[in-house]
Image (cartoon, rainbow, N blue to C red; front, side, top):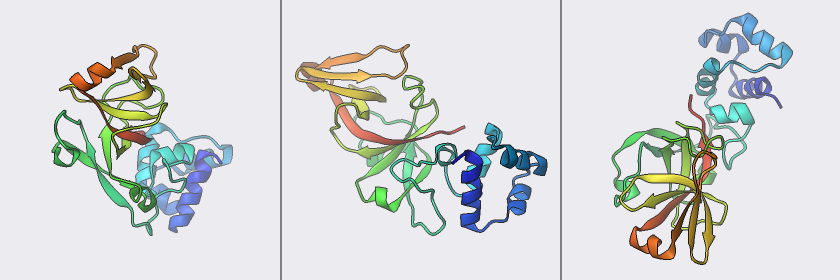
Length: 208
């Protein structure tokens, strides 16, 4: 299924006429019908307005997948809103952090599996898997499996997002971007600094 088909399916699900959607979003009719006829993708400038109008995410429009839920957010869904943080400071419980920059919806099914928060990514060490400025959806937990992407606190610094590999003598924080180096912390450093896993990344949502 291509992007324009997902847009059309979502529009029909919400009961919105195509002509109304095009008019409301100021999309030239000729442009939209070119997308539909040729199966071409909308320009980036149209993606965010389309996602908001259709009550879904850019990620869903682009890929057809919204994290653990393969369905878009619907008007009938009693979605749960979670706080999106601009940063996670060391020593401050998640529930006490005041640097809230917005909210993101998650499905009731996902919300039942734990406590969640969103975090805006401010670096490019996880490119191209997680883009600069993206919002990651994080389940609060103090441990993850090898290969998982986690939010990690190191000493008195802010949190960092890295892939995790655990060993008998320590832990490796692995960036996706090859311009950044892997960082290994021994068990002694984990205790002394400390190095703490505060959550597992379950979804990344692109923001333009």
